Amino acid sequence: MTQDPQQQQQQRNAIVTTTVATTTLGAVATGAAGASADYTNATRFKKTLLDGSNAVRANHNASALHWNDTLAAFAEDWVKGCGFRHSNGPYGENLATNYANTSAALAAWANEAAAFDFQDPGFSKQTGHFSQLVWKGTTSVGCARKDCSASEGSADGWYVVCEYSPRGNVIGAFEGNVQAAMDGAEEGEGGNSAGSGGGQSGNGRCGKVSAENGCIEAHKNGAVARGAVWGLKWSTLLVVGSAGWAAVGW
Image (cartoon, rainbow, N blue to C red):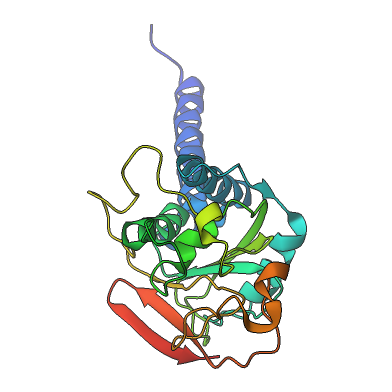
């Protein structure tokens, strides 16, 4: 049956409307300028980090973290300056910048497990993100992210900051808080190396990290018994990336 011109025009309009709607949804899913939805969608960002972190923790016999809005607000306040350096705040802290997506940033932290010495556990400048990530005594996390591509700050691309409470990387407490993977293989074995997917990450801290000394020894000020380190002067932190490491001031 031959359709009249009005019916044909209505069908053409319907096709055009459907095409435009699909294109718009695609743009929302990928984000502006092709950014991962892990970054552009707040719900997905939170879920990716929380679920991914808890999967890694479960493999290291650590209980699941709970999202904490106070920690997230602290991270949000810090990340907006686009300065790739530690906040010197009261929490444990992991940083990552210029990774393709949130999962790649998290994997860079987790993959440091391949370099962690589970036979003689302790703080290392190369494994501080991992040890904070799986620290059994840590119960809460809150994270934030910002696109720093056009910023004059030291962060580049998407910048991720996660805050942890109670903070980990306490000298003298590694043996009970950082356990080997229950499946017998660490995250970095046979897979992507730390720093895969581009980007770099700011080292997890023991109190605060000195590039020269690592973490402060347990006996100083009796601080570790109280879960922190006080009264000490620090000048550097370690930046870890796929191309190696460099000490920078803070």
